[in-house]
Image (cartoon, rainbow, N blue to C red; front, side, top):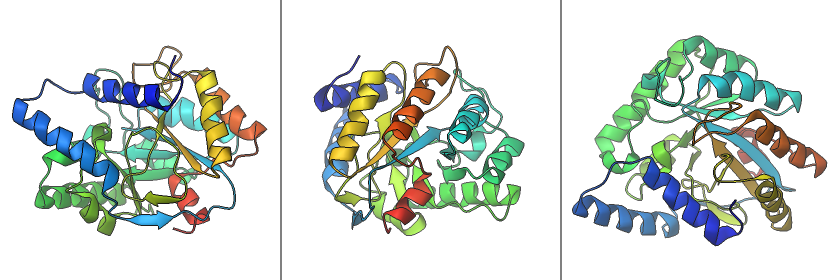
Length: 271
């Protein structure tokens, strides 16, 4: 299993590559430049003012197992999660899981979980022009608000975790935050449009790794964000088991670290 930030970063790089097709030389160069700039160009710098460490549990694509098993486990610990939904995926099979349908999205919202935006068509931000991104945001908002007009859609997660230096400012005008999958703890001054996140994925982290992440969050008075997908006894390469999710929640409980949705964590931090 992975130990240390350098290994976590390599695991993150391998994870993102595993989800993509082989790129052309030009797209590889563009991706390399983007990946360098997106980490260092802070489109929305903000100094977190949280009174203590905190943790958020987030699920990309909102697989059915995350909305059922995952949400139920969170609720056992009086926690609520953030589920990033791409409207075009609703009820469809990805090859690894089935995404939640309309009724389940509404049910999550009614149970106090946060619904976030993941574009409508689940297209990489780096592949979208400003006009195309605006269309994706508008279509996904329309889809979600048609399900329940009271559903706030305040936060965004980059599909495939791929942040875009060219879309950051645009996203900052539409959302309070955008989350990637670059490992690390958010503390001090952060870029709200490229929040770091730690994989809660069986293939990338174990119990010791979870404990180290919490220790780092406590030492830095930081915000630990976990991300994953399905929650299954035998998860996909991008998901976690119920036992690993429970362990992370127990780790938070033992340390008295509140488990908050992204929206509520941002409010606590004064954003």
